[in-house]
Image (cartoon, rainbow, N blue to C red; front, side, top):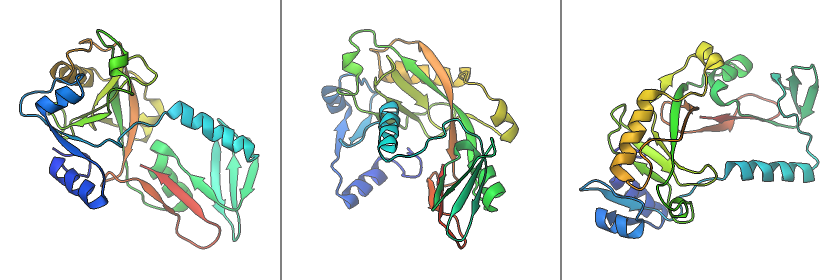
Length: 258
């Protein structure tokens, strides 16, 4: 299989050994014994890494805002940013309401607009592909606690999803009352025009693929998702994130995304 740019189980095992990360290979039987939520197909081998997890996004954002307030940071949530200009010892950020904010440095994280913003503001070519992916949420037939994050790990599978070669990923119940499952990197590519008008409806073909995976791995989940929705992937050619200084003299500007 191919887990983004990291290869299959053997390649991941080499990385874990090199980095001194705890890991354990599990047979189909051992996987079922350790995590009874999984009922994998025959000849399945799993690689368990106990430090894998999921970031609680809502809580993390709330804590970040709390810290910002303690540091007396001014927040302009929902503001349109028109431009970011570098000076010799400062960076000027211009907002849509004509307000100008000046600081010693700036971090620009434009999400799906990374390529266009990098070109427009900094004359940089940062190639990315934006795709409209679909995630589905499946309710347990029995106890939700069994499928909660305290008892079930996050997972990646190289099982053929019928739409691409990167398999599936999933997250146990955290806040939404269902297990999150998604065929990985199979969504429609969006150009800038489509990006402005896309909706959050799930793609029926990807929803079907997600259902096939659940049927193969999770008999304890309902066969039909109670909710599906789209999300945007912004992907560089090598699947790595962009996090670097914008070249040039003057105050530092950090560009982030991918």
